[in-house]
Length: 261
Image 1 (cartoon, rainbow, N blue to C red):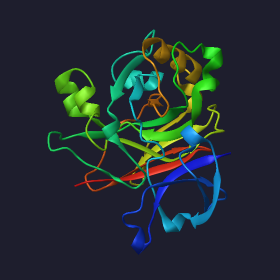
Image 2 (cartoon, rainbow, N blue to C red; image 1 turned 60 degrees about the horizontal axis):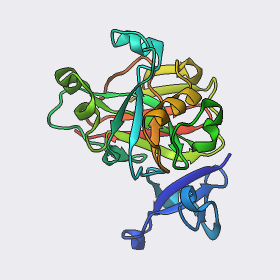
Image 3 (cartoon, rainbow, N blue to C red; image 1 turned 90 degrees about the vertical axis):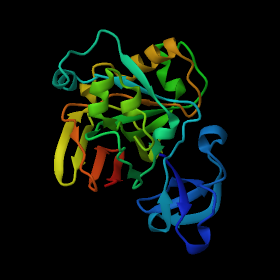
Image 4 (cartoon, rainbow, N blue to C red; image 1 turned 135 degrees about the horizontal axis):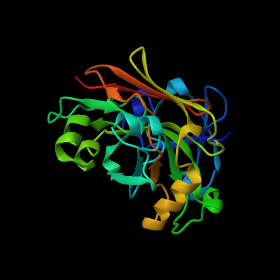
C-alpha cells in the first residue's frame, strides 16, 4: 500500500522549513517526494527520514471544504434519538478545522462538552460532479482517519451543526493518506485515554462509499483535496480536558491528539 505523508523535520535548523511530502517505504522510513502527489504524482527524491526525525502534519489541507455525512451508522442514529435517514444528511466543516496527528484540539470557551466522533475520511483526487456510484473509484485519491470533534452542548443550543462542528482544530486528520486502502469489514475504534468508547466495522455504514460519492457530487462540485467524512458509529461521548483521544481503523492506522485544558 502507498501511504502518503506530509511532514516537517524536527531538527533544530528546520524550524522554519516548508512542509514536505513523502511516502512510507517501511514501518519507520519515509522517502521524500518532489511535491504534493495529489497534484503532481509521485516523483521520488534521495532524501530519507525516519518517523522519529519528523513531525507529521495533516496529510491534506482541503483548499475548499470538508463534507461530512451524519447519522450513517444505525446504532449512532439510535443513540441520537432517530433513525438512519432515507438519504444521506450532509454538512460542511470549514477547512480551518483541520489539524494533524499529535496536534492539540482546542476546547472552545463557549462549550462545556466537547465530543469525539471517529470516522473514515475520503480524499478526492479530481474535479468532479454527478459521479455514478460505479465510477466512484475514479475520483478517490485515498483514505485517511478523521475525528469529527463536536461541541455537543452548542449543537443542542443551535439546533443545527455548523458552529458546533466548525471551531478551529475540530477536524484532526491523519496520519497519512493510503491510496490502496479498500473499506470493508475493518474495525473502527476510538479510545479516550485508556477507555474504549467506540467500536464498529466499516461495513456497518448504512450508506457505503459509492453511494456517498454519488450523492454528494449530485449536490456540489468536488475539488481535488476535498475531504469527505463518512459518519461515526455509536459510542460518542465527552473528551477530557487535558486528555488524549485516539481514532484507529484496522489496516489504515491510528490518529492521536491531545486535548487542551
